[in-house]
Structures are given as C-alpha cells and as structure tokens.
Length: 123
Image (cartoon, rainbow, N blue to C red; front, side):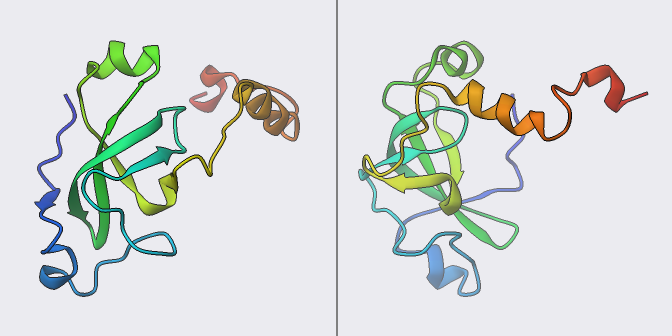
C-alpha cells in the first residue's frame, strides 16, 4: 500500500484558504466535488471527483475511476480512489488517449534506437 502520510486532505472550501500559495497545475478552475473529468495518465479514463489534497505546495484531486482498466482493478481494487494533479486531467470527453497508446510509446522509443532494456539501466 502506498504511504500517503505526507498528503493533507482538504475540503473544497479550504483548498486555497488554508494554502494561499498552493498551485493548481492546469488553467481554469479546480473541478467541483462530483464533477466527472478524464484522467489522462495510465489509461485510467473517466473519473468522478471525490475530494482534494495538498502535497508539497500543489493541490490535487482525489477521484474514483468510473470504469478502471483491468490493471488498476488488480493493483488497487475497483473502488479505490486515485490522486491526480491538474496536469493529469481534462474536462469531460476533451481527452482521448486513443486505442493504441502502446504504439505511441514505441514510436517515442524509436528516437532512442528502440526499446530500452531495463537491465541496461542498472548496468
């Protein structure tokens, strides 16, 4: 289980009142409780905002994935919230990470001469 003891959980009213210098890493307003947004990391998909947190000077949202991918359910459970910063979400259906995100990763790796073997990173 991940240790999140360094996070401070907040109510929507306290976010910038208690932490006036905290940063939201996205243009626009922070989503309201119950809003549905798209998590654009790890292929998590549509999430519902369930709360907020403050970590190292930044504000993020706690969110419940509405239809989490299989890996997420296996690793965390179907009803486990995730933590997202502003840069990791998009409103509604605005974000589409596509069906072939693996191809995008492989294309990126071609610039490095192909996939990087993990064992080479620690040699």
